[in-house]
Image: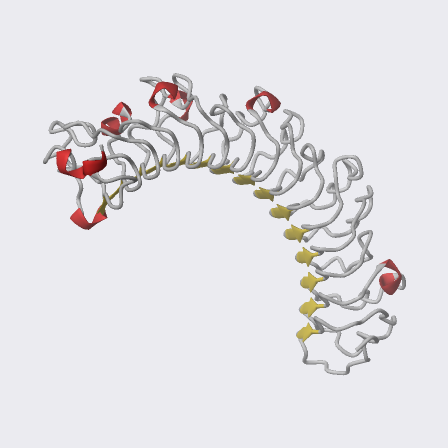
Amino acid sequence: MTLLPIIHNLLATNLDMAENNIRIISPQVFSGVPNLDTLDLSKNKLDDESFSQNPLSNLTFLKKLNLDGNQFTSIPALPPSLEELRMNNNKLSALSPHCFKDLMNLLNLELEKNTLHEGNVSPQAFRPLERLLELQLDNNRFRSLPLGLPPSLQKLEMNGNLVEEVTEEALRGCVHLGVLELSHNLLHEQGIATHAWTRFKSLEALDLSYNKFTSVPMNLPRLHKLNLQHNNISHIAAFTFRHMRSSLQSLCLSHNALSNEGMDRVSFVGTYRSLGELLLDNNRLGEVPRCVRQFKNLQVLRLDNNQIRLVRQWGVCHPRNSGSSLTSIHLENNLLDVERIPPNAFSCLTDAQGLVLYPQQRLSHDR
């Protein structure tokens, strides 16, 4: 189907025309379905010319519009009633100052897999989006965060870009931001402005995985969840997490370059009472970090795929730490002689099935 037919159904609220070859939409095509709530036109051949005569103008109740997988280079004229707009995998090359004019009801905007970057996105582009909660800009060409983000924003996804820096100005007004995802970028600790996100009181989850960090960045906001896996982190400075004041619940440092020497005695101060999940697998640890037994509410501990040869008698569990909540410990794929582990090393584990010790990288008789 290359031409969308005129449909007459006053009761229709949902129309799915995805995966066709529609190229042309006449102005009258939706005149017979004025009560549409949801319209899916994804994976067609639509472009700027297809919407040149504003074919959606009479759809005054339309809330969800899917234009994924078409050939738009700019945002077309759209009904003000929209709450969700998807334009992933198009050819969007610019967001002009007035491209979202009248879309003050929009809550969710997805613009993944386009060719957007900070140079072709106007700082005024998002200004009309006074109620926007979620913005997805994954897999574009941003080197920095766009300016003029809506103050209402609660979730921002910019995974798979070329982001090298986070400035103070970019997120200054985003006081309600709760989730920020910046994985698969080019970020390093020098690219984070000192006060880039320290003023945030709502930010709960920060994803900085698959970047270029060599140490855990300082001046992080108070978070519940921090993901730093797949970087090249070899160092955690003293008191890095002190300011979090018992807020951090999940810390992922998997697939880095951490050794015991790279962690200071007080590196994790500020997390001992709150942290429930600590993931240190796939690093370069030679023994169980001495800080482990300091955690009061830790439930999940991942230390697998390191170079650990030694588990001290009180290295994980200490007799003075009563009321343990530890349910899962992974120590497989290390260099342990399991038979030499002290018998009470894991006595605080609440579930014996939560202990994983096998396989090891080599057998004890090879030592």
